[in-house]
Length: 509
Image 1 (tube, rainbow, N blue to C red):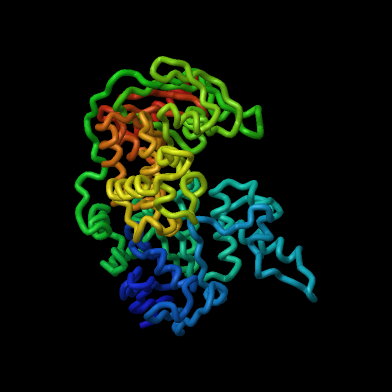
Image 2: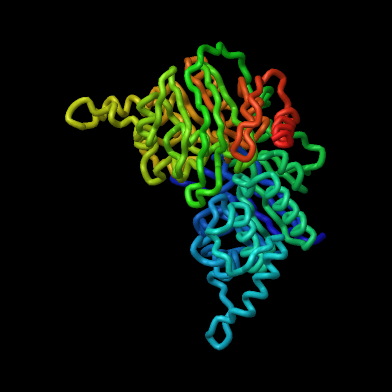
């Protein structure tokens, strides 16, 4: 019987006294797709960093065999030379360089010490064709969309003669069409005997693409099983250690009077003033209501709520009424002063300061409230608020002094929510609140949203996931091409009805 392409045996990785990975073993064959599943903080990324030598040989216990040989790697370059490549959720491309320069970065082809541009250009074209990307190799990466950049990363890995490709949350920021292209590419790689370890919280993708599924929880191996015949409910139970009988805890809410109205909001592209990102849009929000905003990426959902929050980077016009009075927010500070808080779509860019502590991030927006005299922070009251916030939102951290950048995505998101709640908002805007978050953390956030509404806060949820919008919203706003196409009461509303509303309205436009 032929040996496996990869064998990881009894891998243990410690950080101080904490075992992030505890005696985990897994194997994968050439041409096989193995999905690695588990909640945030379960040890998935740590295990892959061990495999790719981000944590080099000697910093962990256990053995790794690749291609029938013991793998002793002292850095990422060693594993790449063996044919192991990892594509992280945060892409490692140089935006101001061309596609060709990125693909050959560190592995340039030369003739007599001179770069062989023509030879690299032809090779780059072949790599781009393999990932179904029809662009000029001399295009700057910064000019590409996120989905195209993801494909450039894969082409870069293929150029290094990859035998095992690790994809960490590859579709977290992709559209449905871009996701379909990516899954087709993974399937094509399988046909060329390239193995793939696929990490995703999107269980429908995991089921669709995997041959084998490996589940780890709290750093320990739980099960490795064939994907065929495994239900999503069974997979979730293995991941979280319990059955989630109801992922979306939808509750009836006592919806009160109108508190917010937007009318005639039009926003232009920050650079190209001829393009309208939002086109004469508006909506009404009531006290104690969850308003979901649905639509494809690029439909204008984020831009609409950015106009409300005073954070839209371009020119816009329209009317906003808060409690019956006309308002206009030139910046986020003014919006927060009027009781509006927002959790942005990109938490790493706009939500946290990674090098600062968890506690400092939580109190950052409300710091003025802890300075009763002469601008001096009352550290006792600040620390009490931090402890209360961490406990209330169940933020898993070793201490409030830990750098927030070292937390899992779900716990970062909880800390950002805690920051917003310290502002005591009347209206909370959540833009993609569960992107890149595991199934257990998602349920906790949904329960928190319902609790906030019970406390009288009105919530606006922008999400690309229709099941999420339908699962928690009282009313659903459907947007397409910058315009509001439908405003639907969520009473047994289906995904098909939401999409039909957008398409029907478009055809009548």
